[in-house]
Every structure is written in structure tokens, then in C-alpha cells.
Length: 579
View 1 (spheres, rainbow, N blue to C red):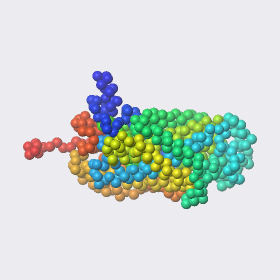
View 2: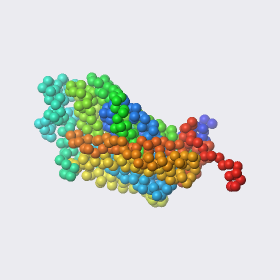
View 3: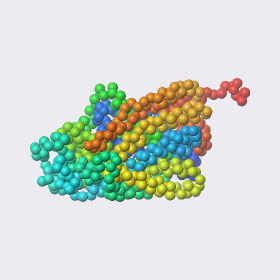
View 4: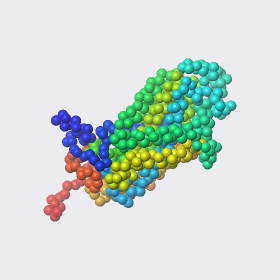
């Protein structure tokens, strides 16, 4: 009995359920459930958790922002996450194949593919820049620590005194005249910013002036695509083994940086800026909009990746349990990363004698300007720089694996014959080569402008539209002609669907290039459409595709005990006689 129970848990069944042979021999499955959970965590926990959430929390009321953030997690994130996992697991198809339930909505699947394509192109460019900084950190002195380089200008003013250029030594206090200079941002350009703009990017004057392709970035882009391809060469069989490292080691690095950060002078001040609540901001709609935007973007809903990864689950896996674990892990990581970021920024602000708000930043400005500059103040700074950029690489790769697998699985499932199943490796290679070629313009001198343009608009309002249509299609269109829910809920679903679709975004959250403000932003998801998804998550998908469903009393696609929806009304005796 003990062995049987253990085997049932490995199969993904709930504890009270017998082990079932529900593998998909044609498409394959995850080696075990840990691989699926780690892959999903790596997909959800990405660069945005490190370079966007801490800044949003600081800007929107500190600790007070946690309240709308976790409200949105409960009423928006987890229901949508669970809906996509159960949808993909039931159909055992990618983001295109699942729409055999209602072919008229197949355009939703194509929309998911387009979103994943856009994100996959520019996301790997960000990874390649992290690779470049990682390789540049393999030196005794970080190249962005001082202003004595050929690319530096007269406006450059470093936080280190050139007389203290000794390996591993703590920098001395800044001279009064230099400290005065550093306190006037209009008169100062940091060496890390000049390294980023004038050396790494060789930034052009405008978005239309592409200039030359930066060959070092092009080489790093090739390295990043080769790494992604090799990790996906056997599909989920190979990527499922890689995530044991790529999904767990970032937490080791975060912990190391956290321990080092909180021991620095001024770290407590930075953390207080991050956590001090400003309760009056809860009344602002923009704060709730930013919370919804971050939840929606961070979890990866409507990208197609969740459906794709769940399609390789065994049919009776407890996806409700997985959705709660992964969603909470993702949000907890965002909060934890805030302590890591602001402890170092607090130390930097204390060293410069300025307010923390003067050094706080987000996006590329945090990852490649502010944080690297703060690392130069630490003893043995190249070591901390190597750890930080290695963590960024692993966080990016975890998301990139799923983006590429989403496209490959959609193509293979759409063709569906034995030949393409046997040649899936070549499909993966073809998609990787296409992604590399499409990413070349982003390594030009104007590439960062296009990267931010794609980041702001590729996965923004389109995610809202895709999610709304998906909720309506599954619950209202597909469910209308099946036993998806008891008839009593149908009159309620109709007005909710209309209101959810017509609810406008609450606000926009701008993403800024250091020194070049961009008025582009990321719209937020409508709250009512997410409440509609919460109602949807209480119901089962009916039979129609995939492996035969189990009897109702043994189905593991049900919700947790105590949260079941009302069962369909039993047929009356008269109805039974007529039948």
C-alpha cells in the first residue's frame, strides 16, 4: 500500500486517488511533477520580478502597495493561472491545438503565438546584454567603476576616488567638492551610465538611426540562442532537467546578495524606503492598476506558455495545487528581490550622501546602470557583479525556455503528423535561428529604442484582450453547449462577460530608458474580467478532446475540498422515465 500511494503521488494524482495510466505516449510528459513546477516557476519568475516590482512597490506607497498587490493575486492572478493550466492539461495540446473545442476562437491561439514571438525576440537580447556584462565582470577592476576610460566624457564623475584604486579595498570617504558635484544630477553622469550608453550600446540619436550592429552584442546574442536551443533540444525531456539548476540557483544568488546587502551601512534606510507604507495612496486608482499590471505580466497569463507547459502534464495531475504554489512563489520572490535591491541602493545613497529616491530606478536603468554602480562600492566588486549578472541570465533563460517551447509545440501540434513529431528538434532549431535573425536589429545602435518599444506594447493591452476572449470562449461559448456548469449560472455569465470586455484599463505604468524618457506604458488588466475568470475556475472542462475523463468522483481536475461548485441538478424521475 505504501508503494502504491507513493507511485500515485508521482503520477500527480491527489492522495485519495488511485494511480492512473494517463501518460501521453505520442507527445511525451514531464519526467516527474517537480520538473513541471520548477519550469513553471522559472517561467513566471523572470527579470520583471527583480527590476520592476521593487520600484513599483517603492513608487506606489511602499508596504501599502502589498495590499492591492495580494488582492490582485487572489482575485486575478491565481484564477487565470489555474484556468490556463487546467485548459492545457485537459486538452494535452499547445496554445493552437486547444482551440479545437471552438475553432472560431483559434485566433486567440495565434494571438498568444504572436505575443510569445515578440517577447522571445527581445527577451533574448536582454539576456545577451546580461551575458556581455557577465563576461565584462571577469576582471580585477570593473570597467564602469572609474572615469578614466576612452569613452568617458567631461561630465563623468565616479563615486570612487582614483587614488583608492586598490583591489579589494574599501573606498575612502568622498572629498567635499566631489560629494557636492555628485549631489547635482544635472552636472554628473555616472561612469556606469556612460559605459552603458557610450560603450555597450553606442546609443544613436533617435530610433530611426540604426547605425552599426554592435558585434560584441551580436556574439552574445548567438551564445544565448545556442544555450536555449541546447537546453530544448529534446523538448521537455531536456529542459525539465536543466530547470533543476536554472530555477533554483537564482534563489541562492538572491540570498547571498541579501545577506551581503543587509550588512552594509545605509541598508536599513533603503529597506525602509521600500517598505514604509503610505496608506493614502491606496485610494489612487493608479496604484491598483500597477498592482494588476504587475500580477498579470509577471505570471505570464495569455502568453500561451502556461497552456503549453500544462499540456505535458499527466491527465489527472492536481493542477489546482500547482497553480497556487507557483503563483505564491512568484509573488514571494518579487517581495524578496525588493529587499536585495533596496539594501544595496540604500548603501549607495548613504555613500553618496543623497536620498534613496535619487538612485532608485527600474528596468534597464536598474539592471545595467544603478545596481552595477552600487556594486562598485563593495569590496571584491567583480565577484558580486558576476553573481548578479549570472542571476539575471538564469532568470531570463527560465522564461525564454518556455517562450520557445510554446512556439515549437504550437507548430508541431498544428501539423500533428508522425513526421514532424520525429523532427521536432529541427523545428526547434528553425525557430531558434529565426529568433536570432529577427533579434539582430536590436543589437544595433538604435536597438534599445526598439527593445523598449516592443517591451511596452508587445505584451500589454493585447494580453487583456486575449484573456477576456478566452474567458468568454471557454465559459460562455464552449460551456453553453455542454454540461460545463449548472444552468442557473448561465444568466449571470452573460452580463459579466459584457462588462468584463467593456471595462477599460485602469492606468499605465511607464517604462523609461535612462536619460531618454518614453511615454509608452503597459495598460492593466480589467478587474471585472479577472473576477469572471475566478468564477470560471470553479468549473470542469467537459469531455471532447484528450484522454477519456475519469468518473466525476475521482477527477483530480476538481477544485480543492470545500471550494467545489454546485453539481448539476439530478434528473427527475419523470425525466428518467421519458428517457
